[in-house]
Image (tube, rainbow, N blue to C red; front, side, top):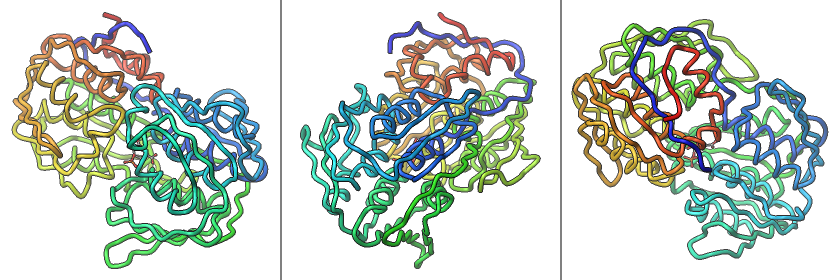
Amino acid sequence: MASANLTARPGSPLRGRVRAPGDKSISHRSMILGALATGTTTVEGLLEGDDVLRTAAAMRAFGARVEQLGDSRWRIEGQGGFSEPEDVIDCGNAGTGVRLIMGAAAGFPICATFTGDLSLRSRPMGRVLEPLARMGAYWVGRDKGRLPLTMKGGNLHGLTYRLPVASAQVKSAVLLAGLHADSGVEVFEPEPTRDHTERMLRAFGAEVDVADQGGVRRIHLGYGQKLHGTHVRVPGDPSSAAFPLVAALIVPGSEVTVEGVLLNPLRTGLFDTLREMGADLTIANERQEGGETVGDVTARHSALKGVVAPPERAPSMIDEYPILAVAAAFAEGETVMRGVGEMRVKESDRIALMAAGLAACGVAVEEEPEGFIVRGAGKVKGGGLVRTQGDHRIAMSHLVLGLAAQTPVTVDEPGMIATSFPTFRSLMTGLGGEIAEA
Ligand code: S3P
């Protein structure tokens, strides 16, 4: 997506109260489960970012009626299953979209061809294709399981599967395929990952058992589960809230509150880590909404210190390391982020791009195969032109950095910010941040 560069300039403090956009993970799932269910699903607070809109279009292609009612409210009329799409399913930039949809589609005796943009076509799909093939799905495509590929599903068998990588996307693909297998599926996850699929399957009427077996999580979905349409209230995305909150921590004089942020403990690793760094981060008005805990999170400018981010916390903040690295650049001392090799297979190689982007802004960074170390000096020179390779989180992280650096920071290809946070620029400028086309 071609778009003019964006530049963030240091300036006044950030102040105000905002709402984070809807959670991306829950938004994708509301579309997919709504299409798989029988009857009407209504969604409020859907993230209307490009990734989720691709999933909505895919659900239409598989036979569901999907309608935008306005104001982030949507209605999905599910057919209780997928029918064969007439055309290629293009999931754009969305790894979550395509991996979950492939899992869901594998349950039906239909043929579907999946593709995506340049970034998605380079990302590994073998991690979901392997368990789906063990259940009985077939696929053909380019080598190494990259998109585009064509899959034919149906007549699936049950599966017992131990996740080889900590990935909620893989877990979810197996569970969604398992809805139409001839016996139950069980997934063992050595490191717990976000549990939105389990929670939402229950909300749509399925029985899902989750138990701890000697430190390993076992998720069991029994045979013959039926999904029924329901109402989904999408909480604010903590992965998006992270950007204005970290901006407030590093821009002197700032105080920002983000309302209605999802506080599921499998998603809040960043907040724990920032607190350990000395961040003044408080939560008010904690409440239950749509089966999840949400709250209003306030960040005030803070003197931060470097920490070791515990590797076992990685799954609960895997998308937040880029913005954590920005906080680390303004901290005093070393922040060590290890056990995050998965960052290399996200929308870009996020370890490499963060290391390069921070270095371009005068920050000392050391890259390792499965992690990186940021040596913070309390202040950042800035001035860099940061290459984002169209990765939304790389772009937003460096724009936040530019709001607190000594000189402006420019990012290329910022158009992809719309995949997860279409209102990022207006929200940040509304708080007082200076972000403009360069
Ligand atoms: C997601 C899971 C994570 C995360 C992604 C959303 C999900 O990916 O990076 O942005 O909604 O399940 P992995 O499960 O592959 O780590």
